[in-house]
Length: 358
Ligand SMILES: C[S@@+](CC[C@H](N)C(=O)[O-])C[C@H]1O[C@@H](n2cnc3c(N)ncnc32)[C@H](O)[C@@H]1O
Picture 1 (cartoon, rainbow, N blue to C red):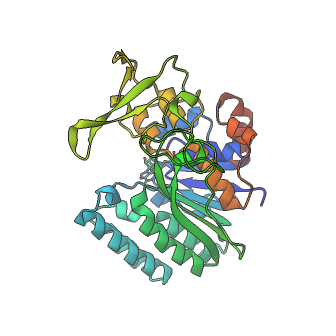
Picture 2 (tube, helix red, strand yellow):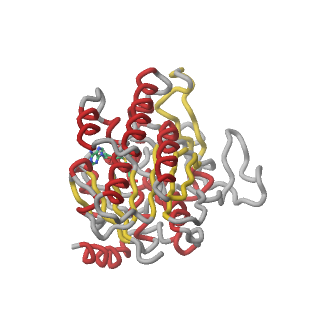
Picture 3 (cartoon, rainbow, N blue to C red):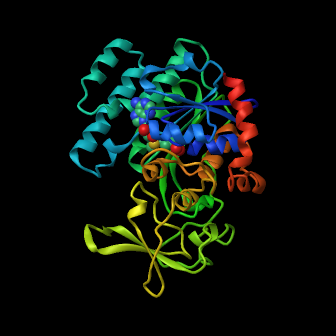
């Protein structure tokens, strides 16, 4: 399925685009945060700085794949009434959109929503349906990723896209099961036009459980990777979370450098890093936090609030597996995965991609 071109909505600092470029697939990202755009441009990624709601498929006529990671805070207010109501609202809008109710009516009702982010999670569906109805050029593949709380929305998307002629799979993936040295769960949807079955990528590495050693678990899979595997610190250390576990500020989560990192969030710089003798060590640099997300060590993080940019991103290594599965390609090989270690040599490839778009 060559050549493919991706338009990436809510593109952030480029987690998905880095993976795509390394697979030889050109991308263009739409992102409104100027800081994330500064990083993207420094990395040479094609970037449209603006609101996803003001664009549509006609602005990216060459793109035949749609990707997106819409902002998710509405659904992460764990289990509370507002989160549930937001979900019910989204599900009913999905039904109305697929039933081809009048676009303007839907847009009017969306603009009345208390929380505008409810509408943002529907943007990829608007793009997918517009590509079909208005341009008669359905996207060949669609890739969506978000926090686990968004899985019910992806299930509704799956049902909707099946009706539009897509084969779809969606579910939760664990990042450490794909060799990311970090435990993080993501809700992922992949869809492809046609009748060939589509499946989420299979785990390559074992999943991590607290206190388990590297050798335990399914022998057919590789051991999970640890912080030590990707960071160049000279001696083992402990990371002490800024947050208490279960609401108890004294029960701060801890991970040893011989384990995968806990989920990298925008607040990673608040975590303490201590030696095994209790000595305070330097906290994670941007490069190190990026490595825990499998960004290249020399990724040119720029602009303000880099921690947030890093925490927002999809780990490029996971994205490589997800994109390959969405395209029906074999899983990325060692050379492709190794190409994520450094970024600088990618410049030539990115220049080509830029030239193709401009
Ligand atoms: C969860 S992050 C996506 C990260 C991205 N997938 C990556 O791997 O780097 C969501 C992003 O959406 C951006 N965003 C939120 N609302 C937006 C809008 N209306 N238009 C464009 N970008 C928006 C945020 O600034 C944030 O960077």
